Length: 235
Image (cartoon, rainbow, N blue to C red):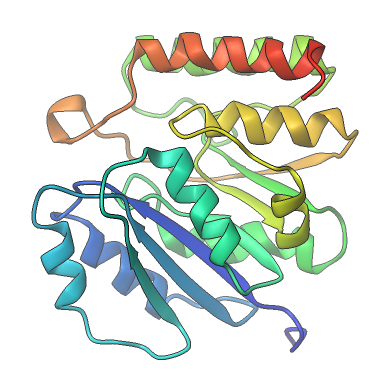
């Protein structure tokens, strides 16, 4: 039986995802979870039809909230906004592109509910190598290996979207990133505190840049800089 004091806030950062955002939100509303949910959508200044899709969705009082940013600030800023606005005791990040099936969130939140940890990552590599381009896999594994080298950790997927944390911990990290560098920043600050990240396998259906993939090689270089900064800097 779920602890009635727990609430899972699922943060959905969205930028130009009119083709998939409705399907993701419908899945988030219908999946079984071991704890009550709050779905907090942060529309990060989308310039396609995303806002119209979101405005057309039926309101779900107390469960679905939609925030619209006037201009695009980046995925990191959208996640930080979600963390600040979340009312739950646990926060999770869910992309709006259907690469990751929301039905997997129930298994990911379980270790936190059981008191085993304050941080869970959904690893795309614990189920074998995903059907992604070799260069993408190489980049992800390189960044993860660099993370483990710097911080003495043993994780397998630093760049995963599925990061689930206790909400008070998430806010205490005082995150600063505005773009995709939010991923290494969260990881670096969690590991610097000596916290253990528990990983669980997740299924992953990668999409191409032509299908809307936004992260690029410059974001990989920025991730390396962030990892070094938080390992040896004072922040």
